[in-house]
Image 1 (cartoon, rainbow, N blue to C red):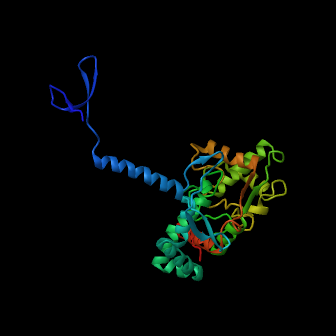
Image 2: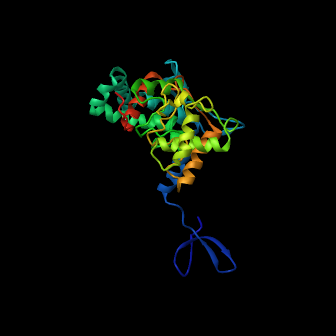
Image 3: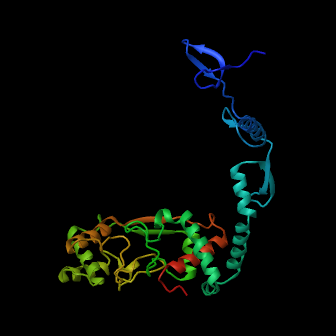
Length: 310
């Protein structure tokens, strides 16, 4: 066996390879533990590729031999190749937190709204679970804080409900959806008449207005020319059955009067609604949410809203 060659300067063992007369390659093998760790990672990768989804193949991938069992939407036990989605479904059904959630959902389902409101634990659960249901289904329009968007989507945390704020009315709204409609009067009323009606609407809220114009607007509002009283009533208080706004409560859901800089801007905002009307629709959630989820959502809105929903 050839005697190892050592570098004369450092005394370190070399491989015997020399370049440019003086440049030598030291013989520094990797530690044994590192070599075996490297081999271990190769073995681990091979086992992983066999058991779990791994390699892409065209438009698919290798599924692996690992499986996972869970219940499908019909309640049947199914076996699927192991993947993170299946694991998530299983955890949502069988994990400790999921079982606790099912327990509280059963309690809420069996309780009345008054019992839910009086039970601190159920109320806390409704706040937590209901926030998720609201976020998934309602927040896109009504915003995460349920404050809505003036002119588009109603505020759900004030004390003004277009379709009624009682428990059964809120539930009906969620189940059946709502169609908010007010005809446009741009082809019916001329500019002077539109201004008069808008002045009258401002007067109903106690805002600064032209009294003479408002008096003429009242005639149009409660007469055949405008016919506004059919939906808003002669007192301007609106009807829950029609979803028509109460014009006397200083709550503005379409015309952004509170944000208007002056009286002229307020008048212009109201005139815009009179001229262009309203046409907006809330979808029905009767087939998107089950009965318990709807109940939690109603209880959550009761909790969020300042209205008396008894």
